[in-house]
Image: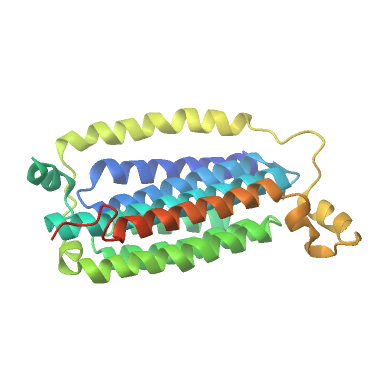
Length: 102
Length: 167
């Protein structure tokens, strides 16, 4: 297994961890943390896919930068929505929020 | 490789630890490790951008959220219910196409390494920082537009007229 494939395995592990956290947790803040880790996994996969002779290409670096900014923007929006939801319902449990919303 | 293993290990511990404050601290640490990992492959720009964005801005956002939410978030109970095992299996299945896709991802054949491109551009009249607008015009423009859109969205969420919380 070369270095590129190893980084891709790390990326897959990060993605699985993030997705699993989103699926398993009952806290909105922890869900956003899982989403952040998923973004890191995608970033690492994009970066590892663009390695040539152990060096990053400009193409993959640009994709990573774009992905970082998209992820950070979405996270900021999600966190602001979390504050609004907490103010309105007083809880961060998504199941409880769903129950209160009806 | 060591940095990659550190990144995966610390991130998994951060997601598994129960206290959200510890999760935040460990994610802060692992975002710095991620940035260093990118830097070791001669992608200093992406690495620094990652550290500034995630270790700087996003960590502060999480900190503010924890301060506002307080005890509610700190007493989070993350019991893995039966229904959530389906989500875990789904996560494992989602990783398979990801690995296949990324293992087939090849850079365009005529592209040089970033270092070679930068050294070539350094001799141009625009100077060493010319690459910022010469070769990255589209993605940097998209970055600016996305960050501006996110800021507008947040301002709209918290404005009195635009869908704020009813009191």
